[in-house]
Length: 281
Length: 180
Image 1 (cartoon, each protein chain N blue to C red):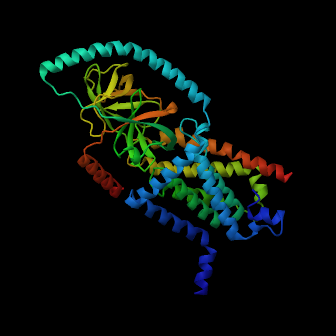
Image 2 (cartoon, rainbow over the protein chains, first blue to last red):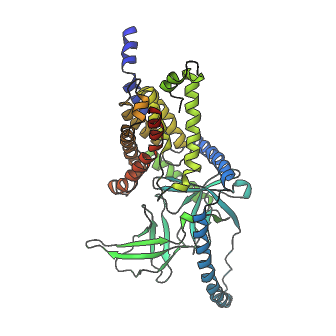
Image 3 (cartoon, rainbow over the protein chains, first blue to last red):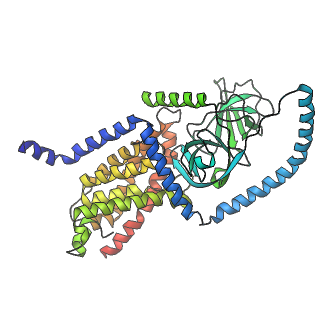
């Protein structure tokens, strides 16, 4: 016994290393369990609260960039308002002709970004709005430029938003001009990638992409990005399409959370899928 | 910085930090403060999503001051703190930090803490352990994805290693001045 203890003491470093590696792997194999989610949600609330205390510190670079973006947006909007008014009247006239029900518009909650979290290729932000404001998991988050992401986790006064510039992002989008559909993904860097678009389909640089009606996560017709570059790789059936997100995530400060929740069954199915993926890992 | 074992022995004979338990509690408090600083303050100096890993620097300093055994336990704790405030696979940062600090702990020499930390050797140790940390961390972050590991590692992993090494110059310069 004494000899065994002596051996353990002598080799305590490699033994500890092995022991800690086993614990780490065990924790990883647990996946995203309910207890773990609860623990992380507590961290979200704690950090969000502390971050709010520090939020008075201004960021001059971000303010300047935001000013420029707002001016540009103002110019763009003033032009759009006229077009919009004309289109709305035309739309109402056509709808009455076709007897189509008006789409139900969901109310929004305005929230501020209090914290950014980057973990490799997974990017999230904390908002200062939570379940007490009516926020629920799965709600869409956007700003005046376009789609920001969706609510990933909620606590009383804060929520965690998974940005579209996230490794796990898969958005069903449609080209505003040609109505070509594809799946938008992000694999790091400035641009997103539009995948599953055959070479024969009409997609050009400058085209705007909107969320399509096939998405279980996001509502239809929300601007996501602009096609930046279209290249054709020899030997591939698909095009390589780079998309610049409409939202500038570096200066993201205020966002709108749409109070539209995906169908509970869709959320449930997504959870089951996630659990299955975690188990396979 | 006078918290480290050797430091306390050199500075005073009756420091409260001579008691290992008190010292370890102090390490835990510092690790918590650093994790908060990492989340709250380093956003301003983040470049392209890359920020220095303060917890790793601290864990390596513990390994150089207390030895591999305590260093690994500190790294595991720091990794769990990091995992709890981030959204990746829980335990992956703990694993990466434990292995990287184990590597750093190989450079532990009793009684040489100030000399090691106050020299360029310390930056080399930080660069090595940060490199190991990033390889393991990114491996788990990218598995089951279509992202090319080499491309991603060259872009983000190497950048983070360099940025962390640059930040490690602050404690190095502090201890280099104390050596004089």
